[in-house]
Length: 275
Ligand code: ADP
Ligand code: MG
Image 1: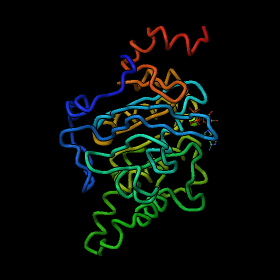
Image 2 (image 1 turned 60 degrees about the horizontal axis):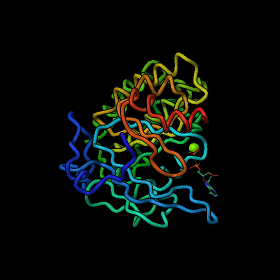
Image 3 (image 1 turned 180 degrees about the horizontal axis):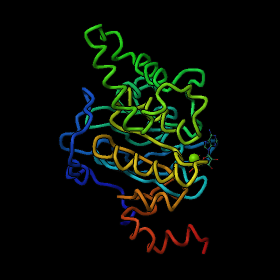
Image 4 (image 1 turned 45 degrees about the horizontal axis):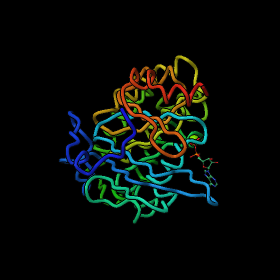
């Protein structure tokens, strides 16, 4: 519950979540969690956007990250995906992949997928073609895909369409989808690359209530198979999907625990209500 920096022993003890997980070659999560941040600091012109941030995510977790504007949530995702290099600290993906030493494409290739707020689907292409293009864009897989594997690729697309609840829309141009459906399609495009860890920054912003509820169902269904880190302002949504919640404040972890624990935490109440 408290924001104590996770000790290495704690990391060693972190239990792997149950269930079948997507396993990227080289990402060893057999004993430890899937993501380990320790003492991460990022400064912009002397201002500390991240200040000694420490965080452990177990494989298969659905972790919600909340916090006021400017808390450092997006910067944290920038560090994990290699967009921003930290001034200090350790960032590991699995036991062996040092994220601070890899480029953005290398990190994506290692199995970390990120969804930005604005959907970037190919509007002229059908939903199906968008997923096909996402598969072809995966340089790790595509050169080895032969005619023999086309069936597997088709199965993968069909399974993904089912997961993101867009099977009935498969033949429609993506430009005709609702905002929420475009968001799900983009998540589907990420899934085509079989990431192990998915980072979602404010995924339900701008969605209708119905789309928000369907997104909650989607994320809960993805957890276990994938590991998800969801940054979101919509507290009703967070309450709907929450397992473990991390509260960021001024670049560090203020509190961590269940939704109930977070809501009863005095420091969290002070920060959110400004008391
Ligand atoms: P959040 O996503 O929690 O709202 P951010 O990670 O976007 O917070 O930002 C944390 C702080 O760092 C903010 O004060 C923001 O203005 C600052 N910041 C983020 N990115 C940059 C940047 N590229 N240059 C300067 N300041 C930045
Ligand atoms: Mg942000």
